[in-house]
Image (tube, rainbow, N blue to C red; front, side, top):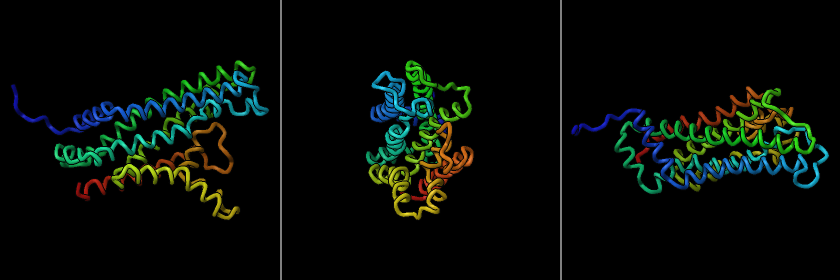
Length: 264
C-alpha cells in the first residue's frame, strides 16, 4: 500500500470544502431555509393574486412573474448567513489552522470555498426559483388572471437573475466573513449594506439626486436584473448586473489579500 501523501490539487481542496459544507447540518438547514422561503412566499403571494386565498387585488396580473418570485428578499436574508458561516465557522472553532496547515498556499482554500458556495447556492436556489415561477403561474392562472411564461420578454432573465442575485449575496457574505473573521460582525455588515444603507440613503440624501446614488447600491443594482420590468429609476439590467458583480468582486479580492497576509 502506498504511503505517499495525496497531492494538494485544486480538485482535492474543492472536494474537502464540499465535504465541509454538506456535512455541517447548519449549512444544509440554511440552504434549505433559503430555498423554502423563496418557494413558499412566492406560492403564497401567487395564491393571493389568483384568488385561491381571499379575493384577487385590483392590480392582479400586472406583474405575475414578480409575484411568483416575491420571496427573494427573505431568501436573501437567509442565504447571506450561509456565505458568512462557510468561513467564520472555521475561525470560531479553530479548524482553520488545520485547513491552512494542509494547504499552506492558502488561496486555493478561499477559491474552493467560493466555488463550492456558488455552485451549491445557484443550483438549489435556481431550482427553487424555477419551481416558484412555474407553480406560481399555475396558481395565478386558476383565478383567470393574466400569467407569464418563460418565453415572455425579460422573464427568463428575471428567474435566472434571482438565482444569480442570491448566489452573489452568499459570496458577499463569504467575502465579509473572510475579512472580518466574525460571524456577528460579517452578518451585521452584510445586512447593513443590503437593507439598512438604502433606507438611510432614502432618508438622508436630497430628493433631487437620491436615485442617482441609490441605484448603485447592491440591493438596487440587483433589482434591475431580477425584475421583468425594472423601475425606471434603476440601472439597466446589464449595467445593474455589472455593478452588483463589482460589489462581489472587490470584497473577494480584499478577502484574498487578507487571507494571504494576516496570521491565522
